[in-house]
Image 1 (cartoon, rainbow, N blue to C red):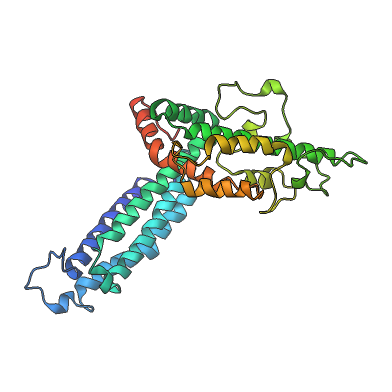
Image 2: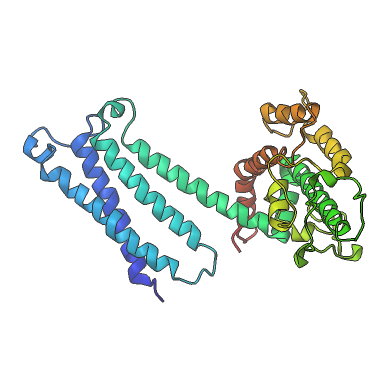
Length: 343
């Protein structure tokens, strides 16, 4: 293999040396966390002393040589368990954090009076953990079977309304795509003057049929009614994590849409029902989405400016709440069952 035991050992040793270098820098530079003894001479700990340039040299070697070599090798490995992106993200983040740490300890003397040098290390570790958790969450949500299991877990153990919100949003997204596909097909009929409801979103010049993956399957292929994310014949072909505007732009490239494109008239009633059920402003709302986002949606409805992207912020906030509040509990539950979120 390209990345064998020696390369992995090199990575672990490099991380150990890096932490050692950081400890030396703290010892030599920090007045609060210093481990240096009074008999140390200024010639050793000053800006030109070996106690400073030795760890800096190690840090530069890691940032400029060790990590780039390992990153190139990591790109070439077989991504069997979908971990390559996580490892590369952690490596790049480590390089950035190392550079930020050196700048912190050398140039930001005034800021060090209020925050320890370890603040950069803490932020880097926190960002790495969040990035890894969000990557696993996205992988679960992109897998229909695992996403159904996670949403069922969230509903059962957390009594959360977020799965219901996401399910209704996904259904609304599929209805929008269905209407736009029907409008597109009607425009291909010669002499069709009346395009039916929802034509304000249609591409009047489109002559190419919808992609094969978006052709509406027969009703018999629809999932069972009990499935949260499979309540529409198109549900299996539409990603759960993308918004309505992005879904239309990606899956129906021949339909002209922009940031000002309005919701099709045929789904206005479904949109109103969704907003009333999940984003109605009031003290009894337990969804957890900030009132500011709900107010923006309500204002758009009152101003009759219901664009395709009006619900995107609410959807993103719902996914963030699921990831930060409930997904970690789901991962721990899987561990008790002898499974893993990354399968």
